[in-house]
Image 1 (cartoon, chains in turn brown, yellow):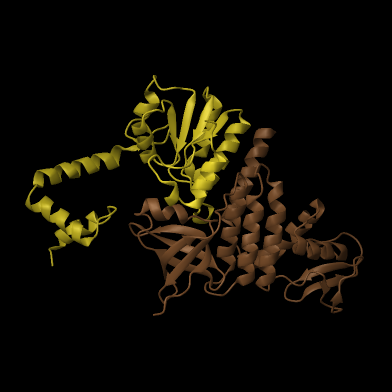
Image 2 (cartoon, rainbow over the protein chains, first blue to last red):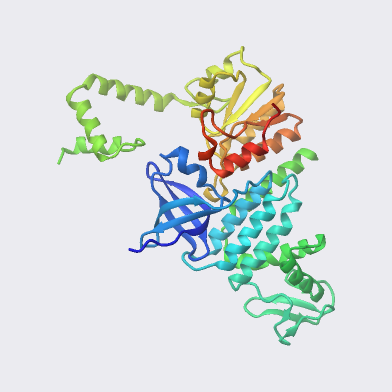
Amino acid sequence: MKPQPLQPAYILHSRPYRDSSLILELLTPDYGRIACVARGARRDKQRRTQSLQPFVPLLVGLLGRGDLKTLGSVENSGCALWLKGRAVYAGLYANELLLRLLAAGEAQYEIFASYQVLLQDLAALPGDSSDQLEAPLRRFELHVLQNLGSCPQLGYCAHSMAPVSAEACYRLENESGFVPVYRAGQAGACEFSGAELLALERAVQDGKFAPELLVTAKRLTRLLLAPLLGDRPLASRELFKQVYRSNHDLES
Amino acid sequence: MFSPLIEDLIRALRCLPGVGPKSAQRMAMYLLEKDRDAASALVRALEQAVEKVGRCSQCRTLTEQEVCALCNNRHRDQKLLCVVETPADILAIEQAGNYHGRYFVLHGHLSPIDGVGPANLGIDLLEQRLASEPLEELIIATNPTVEGEATAQFIAERARARGIAVSRIAHGVPIGGELEYIDGGTLAHAFNSRTAF
């Protein structure tokens, strides 16, 4: 068999396998999420486990034909990103999200690219406050949802087939997208103003979220993620909640 | 090939790490053929250990006492507490020999995807100790992995909220190592946390 060129990859998760091996879940551009066995990775502690860490950009050779590949050669590509402080929770959250959302073996060029952007954004943060994590995470979530086809076009009205108008109000409907709402009064949980949608569309492009827009973005991504995740909650989100809650307990 | 009892023994021995079918067979044959006394001693030791060894009520390390010898030792520095992932880490630090405080064993690290949360790591017990003991410094010696770092961050925030100084053991170039062969991440970390000379 002709040797395959090395693939860029990030490790999303690793778990022990047999006595001395690891099963790794990788994110690669060509195969998307893919599982592989790293034989002897836990025995050869000095050499391999050091580089087989999440958030480290790797070049990997994947061998074998089945769904579960075997890890061949591994090289570090570029500088390892070390997430500081609370940024590491955000990284773990992104990894769990990708594990839950991506089907194995489908090429994901765009998602791989936005994952890299996310890690760079997170690595640049000092990590002492959770608020800084919100904007990179919302942007990443929206990118992922758009690439999976689970997020309707943000600045586009599904009824008039035209861009949304800033003054109108729109309701998110599954399958169809944003449809106009004509009734006045209290906005429901699935309703967004045209101005919000246009601002979100811009923010996904340039990554700059105004503070009040972050709240809207969180509301939208929760709505869109809920049907994809089903009734099993994300464990890293639960962990994050515990971090918040106990800090409030201590302060109050 | 063997009688059922011997097969059972071989299968049972294979639960040990690093023991495959062939070594399990050699162990079983050795115990039955050459050293039955040792086999009986092994049975007794295993039975006693499994029945009696639990966790220390203060530091959660493995011990058959209510409070382990290290926690009971009044000559240890009461103002220092070192958080480690496994009892084997205590052994490693004790062999290094320059730490004289006490320990707390997590028995793992935070790993949300695998369902390991703060409750599994005895964080509530650690918090009780942080609240009730006259600690001056908490040294976090979890492994320098992503999960170890997440765990360290979690514990550090709790301790700082109580006004206890928190430190993290340094990661960097091993003694006798060569820079050329050290991975980029470790080297970058070693540079970022360099010390005045």
